[in-house]
Length: 431
Image (cartoon, rainbow, N blue to C red; front, side):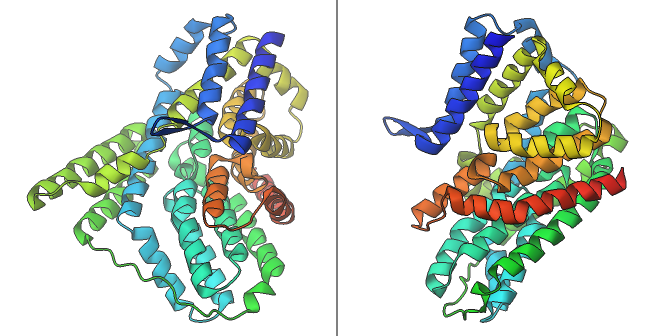
């Protein structure tokens, strides 16, 4: 047991350090993220030292159940592709321009519009995609308008990682944890809606109070107007995302697994995009751009963390943690520990770990949904809580906007902790 714990612990520590101090390495003209390389090396060491049962790994990868990591990766990457396709067309920038234009010269109205828009888009797409799409726009707009970008960056990040709780597709951690325990699309909403509403309302009120003085300053610049040139491809993308979301909602009732629904939608989108390009006698530039932006690095990362959890589970570590946490007050216990753990090992590996812990305990839906809440809101506490936080910080650095670890933590403490307890309170009422 001890060798496995040491190898996994050291791997996670080095992974966090790599993200903070050497996030990328260059091999000629190729730039690679280091976090997944570190986890992959950790798994290789586990395998070389005989700490992993290869039969257990093989059985997990070919298992015909919802917890199969390959199915979950297919679902996540497929939904990400559908969202990125719309982003390549400029759909999110176009919507942002419309909303910001309606704000006129009032920062307060702009702040409210931005929070609502990000919240709605996050519900139906993905928190990571929305954060990556809106952050550059906010940076440019704030610079042109000569206003402090902090309230808007905070509103964007908090809204995206709060309202992502609502639907199973809002965050890969939702997908993983819900799929692991056979929770379908509609059943998920039944237990997520109240915690999301409570957390969303509390976070908005606190941010409004926190930034109310900054929002009194006038706006001197104008919102960016972005025109979508390819209307046909836009509607193709919107229709595919909408139909896919609808079938995800009814998948469990018609006997089709969610990963199958998503991959069919992506296949149809790709074929449609290629046909449009052939008719126009041009390259499928939006599809090509979309394929280039897919988070392929998540594949080795998630698989590596999954194998680590198998190693810990086989050695009895997850059972020991489950016994330590106990079965009393699972909503509070699992909500807090998952929230804090996400900021130690990132929310994706945390979800993999807690999935195994929950399976060895009798904490039911309370423990599962409390962990889901912790995995989403944990991303707002520190920059290392989620991959989106790390990418968000990098974008700000590129735009010369100072938003350090302590600035992030300040908002995390003031906004996120009350939101966490509000969400867990809503979950407690439901259960």
